[in-house]
Amino acid sequence: MMNSESARDLWARLGEEGKPPADPRLAAEVLPRYTVGLNPWIDRIARSYFQDLSRRHAHFKLVLAPYGGGKTHFLLALSQRARTENYATSYVPCSAGLSFSVPLVLYRAVVKSLLLPEESIPGLSRLLARLVQAKKMAIAESGAPDPDAAFGAWLRSVLEDEHPEPAFGRAMVEALRAQENPAEAPFGDAAVLSFMKTSSGSTASPLSVSDRPDGRRIPSGDGRE
Image (cartoon, rainbow, N blue to C red; front, side):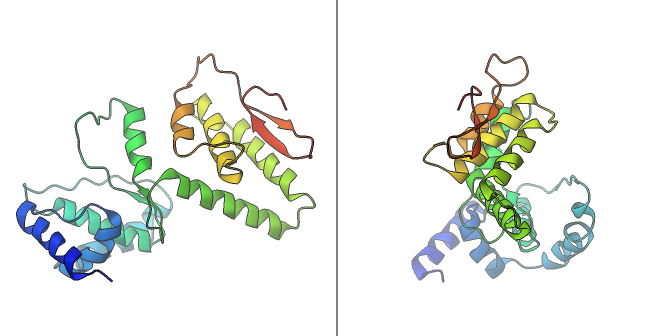
């Protein structure tokens, strides 16, 4: 429950700048309290896209309004609704140095703000942690005789699958391994960003999957145990 001091600070900012709080944790609590007239539009988008079209294909929408017309408020309210429909969202405001012509910088901004449903802290690590958890649960439910070997085989399939960028498979395996065992692979959200720099033509050695003495199959940067 928001305390009175935080509520006054938020109202002061709204009055001075005309902007809702961009912090998703605050927005989730504040927006419903002073959002008026947007629900019919948001409900319509939710029915047409969140519950139907966007479950099959990606869609692009452009929101147009004059300065102070409520674009940010609308997008944040829409993001909050999207998370209730089990979508991850990312709010990336325009800023100096952020350009579609520099994909890595844009990607970094998107994943830094990535917020999953029922999460209060944004970031890529949360997504990867959920992915690893879901995969391990699926392996356990399948009754695999060696869960660790099954997980290693899945990592190898991620590595060997065809990706638009050759470095993507290496990046994802390193990032997933970091979530499985942070002590052995101390990477955070930076894992994917780092490996994304090693695109096609890179001199970096390919990531492979090797056997450990304990029988687990894990990815390694140079193919050695």
